[in-house]
Image 1 (tube, rainbow, N blue to C red):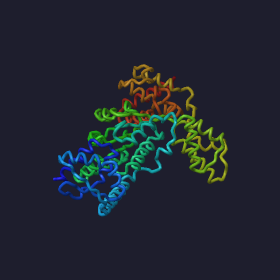
Image 2 (image 1 turned 180 degrees about the vertical axis):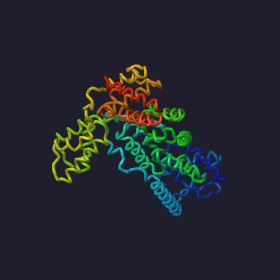
Image 3 (image 1 turned 30 degrees about the horizontal axis):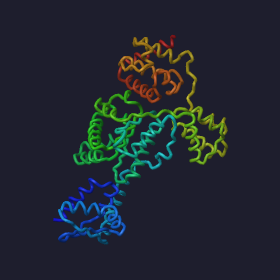
Image 4 (image 1 turned 90 degrees about the vertical axis):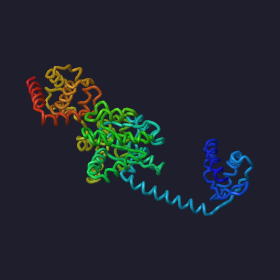
Length: 446
């Protein structure tokens, strides 16, 4: 009878005591009972003394109220409890080790400590840190988008590494959208494998999916992500996606999935500014133990503005040259060996400009040049805009980033997408091929 009353007393105490007191209450184990007394056992004198100071008086009062008589509480040390707790801790440690094996896809090099923060990524980085400290409570879901080489994978994996390091019991899964799709394809034909696949992702505490744009036009993958999304968000589990473009420019993805992406935070990564590029370059040189003169560093950081990957690639190229040839890198050597990383301002045919391309395309499709440069999502205007970008890439020597500047808020990733789309359509749609050829011929005549 007293044991049942003690269990009721614990329930009441957990409702009324502060969390600091509840912690010591958990270490009290019911051992035995007598007519008007119970005995609680503890694994060590430390836990016993802490309970005595923090909980004993309240526990005595609540238990006596339930029993409607004065009940004495005796406290003892029981070494067997300590042994049981050690066994339990060992089991938890083994479980943690198993969980660590599941997260081998996380690159331990991708952390917040080595993520260079600048004006271009400050907001995105701060959002990622909030998510890491309180997964499932803020900015859920979260979409991080930006062009190639701007740090999306670094940031999403930094979230995973931070959560895993500070909450090893959490099931953290990082996966690329391509890998997710391939796993789904392999699982579809086998009921057991399919069930295992669903369990793997729908029981995650934190799900990180990289390059979500890969699932465009993949109906089954979108359906599976939709149900996984609902399952996890219903249980307040954290979801983070990355994409190479904003939601407004995603095509081939079901609207109900887009709607769910919009529910949370959408943050973008912009190309790094000069100061950030310099900080990245200095860190890369330090990692490589590579010394460059200030004028060479300045030349590199002033001219490579596209993304972090290009910047690091240029530095690695110069480092390799220096190591193999045994020469110090001068500005002239740098100009020679990293020219492929620097967008050229030259135009193949000086008589053809992007303005002329846009004008001819607008005339062909009977739309305004203003609409082509703008954000109109009219089907005809979007097609004209994509063809303008495509022709600009084939008829000028401008980089994708430079082409994007001629169109309102279009980065090089959007331009790349438009180019690939027109290339693909040309192969199957004779009318599009005819349109591009006609516009080209008109430009040559002009």
